Image (cartoon, rainbow, N blue to C red; front, side, top):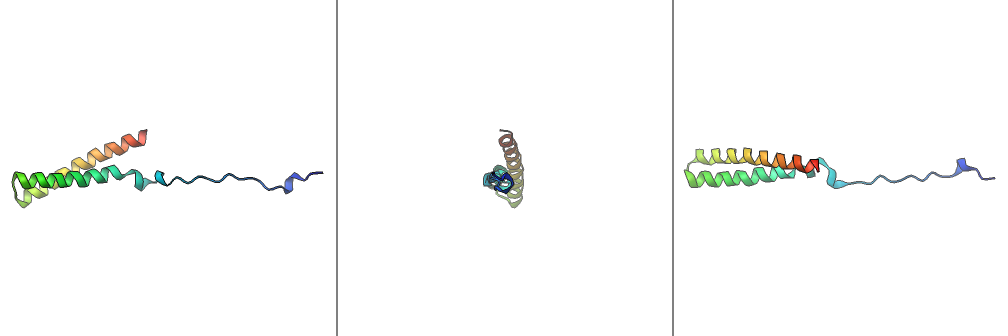
Length: 79
């Protein structure tokens, strides 16, 4: 007679998805902060040419880039 309690169980392996990590999903905000920060630096340089205009342009560009990138990450997370 067969002894079923001696048979080995067949386990399914858990699939690993490296694209689902948190660091991979948060890339749009970093890209937009860098891109619009440099864009703001350029606008500050061509508009006034002073150090204060460069700093203000970079800060405003970075903030706008963060907001755009954060909203893009939020929209991508919903889908």
